[in-house]
Length: 98
Image (cartoon, rainbow, N blue to C red; front, side, top):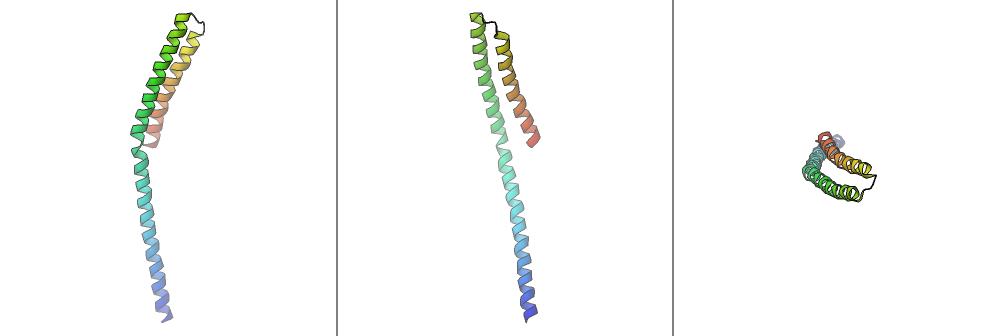
């Protein structure tokens, strides 16, 4: 009688463990799908931020150029570098994680 009860308990524990593993894999798969679904809107948002930064930078460089400021080239390079960084960072993150 003890062997039957012990065998039934061991069988139930093994079955519960198998169900738990299956749900864990399904949960990880669902989480992965949810995270990867945010990459398209995220990269579009980063591109939009890059466009806004580029427009603001263009206005700042134009105002410095119009006023005759000698640091115009340095300002233009820094704003242009910021825009390029945003575009490259979004592209690299997208290719790295997807």
